[in-house]
Amino acid sequence: MAAPAQRALWGWGGATLLILALVAAAPALSHHDPNRMNIGLALRPPSAVHWFGTDEAGRDILSRVLHGGRESIAAALAVIAAALAIGVVVGALAGWCRGTVDELLMRATDLFFAFPPLVLAMAITAALGPSLTNAVVAAIVVWWPTYARLVRAEVLRVRENLYVEAGRALGLSDGRLMLRHVLPQTWGVLNARATVDVGYTILFIATLGFVGLGSKPPTAEWGAMIAGARTYFLDSWWTMTFPGLALFVTVICLSLLGDAINDIVGLRGRKV
Amino acid sequence: MSLTTFLVRRLGGVVLVILGITLVTFVTLHLFPADPARLLAGPGADEALIRAIRQDLGLDRPLPVQYARYLRDLAHGNLGRSIQTGQPVADDLAKRLPATLELAVVTMVVYVGLSVPLGILAAVARGRWPDLLIRLVSVGGLAVPAFWLGFLLQLVLYRNLGWLQQAVGRIAPNLPPPPFVTGFYLLDAPLAGDWPALASAAVQLIMPVTCLVVSRLGVGVKLTRTSMLEVVGSDYVRTARAKGLAERAVLARHALRNALMPVVTAFGVQLGYLLGGTLVVEVVFGWPGIGQYAIGSITAVDFPAIMSVTVVISVFFVLANLVVDVLYLYLDPRLRSA
Image (cartoon, rainbow over all chains, first blue to last red):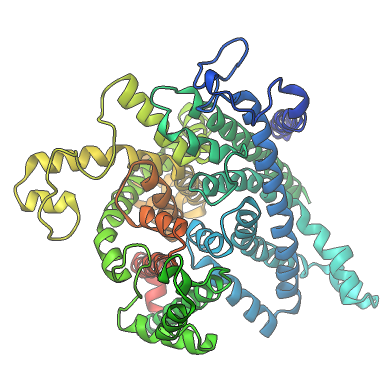
């Protein structure tokens, strides 16, 4: 039964690792400096020297795509890590304490759901000033409430288990029960969700970059590169196509990997 | 709980949420390092002028006082004056809102109109090729950056195939926009009997709407599919089949209505993503709506404009979700009587 899910896990996991490896090895892999301009070589189509062609300033697009991935992926990982941390603390508190604490925390969380995500992120980046760091901050603010809700629901479910009651009867402290016996149970669901979300966060940060609220030019970042190609893409298709393709492939691998994890976690849940 | 109690409670909740939205926006934007008075005064203005502006705008008062004033103005429909255009923000927004709403409404109609039938088809053909194909397109759509897709569409449909004009704006540049009645070109043009304008407005919508629909289609399809599969697996559907009803009747008369209920609520949330997506797609297609205005005001650190855009769009989102809840009430009679 689990075979297709297992295969998907290895397949998409492998593809994701490959992308991460390519991006991590960007400085070694690219023969060109991603930021070196050479107007004489501007807007050259893909060739043996410049596989992905060159942009309006004569920069090598392949090198920029590889280096751009570093920015986007690192930013997305930072967002998910921070959002998870906040979400786990808030969700665990709400689910464990219940009552007034739960009510207060969840109403506060609801408030963040009242904003369309991109709109809230734009307001925050506008307030802090456009930069990649501030785009990351904005994405964290947008993302943590999802995890808070998810963790709360999981904690509410897990805490009803008999073994939690048994632990309490044995005299385990609340903190120990929570950290050792309840929270670990939420990890599977969180893991699946977070994997998918890394992909969507990359997309989100790129979108902010595209509208000028992320990395500043000339930094190579996928969204900003597409924005930069805006004026040239009709006559030079490669300027816009490759950064977008990199974005697309990365997000799709992460989202299918997340689905595979979800399937496996779900199957395990059913077996128990 | 009676219907009235439910509605009163729900409306009370909406008022609180809207207050919360204004508060969060207000607090967020007061983290702002720049001084709006200095921006308004322009470069090289002397300190006395800046002080006067600050006093005039009430920026020298404590934050709670400023917030109270802001709420009072908001209740009077006064959103402040844009630093960038020099016009009242309310006027700026009123001018641009119809463009965004038209795009959002058409997108929502196409989105629901496509994802529900496709989701049902995927559920009915579970595990066979239509299901796999639909799911493939869904996952792909979700992973495509909407703005990139916009450029690709322009590249292929306009540059390579020449099927569509390069989509910039709401209507072909050589046509005058229809006289203002609703602000929706698709309604105003036929009202004025201006058929070329209607055709052009419809054509201009194709690419931006495609972009937005493709980028969210996966979610709508998946929701419908999951919900449909759940209902089809339930006991009462098995009973309906067992008593010899044709499969078509089982699906259309028994399963569909129940399957759509959770989907309706979910579409309310999807509207939030679509509204956000609209802002970005407007930039790609030169759509003269709130999105372009928002991006422009962020670049120009136009404080009152950013704040108003955030509040106005979020309030729209909250109200749309209210409508969805009422719709849900209509679809599920149990909630009405219970």
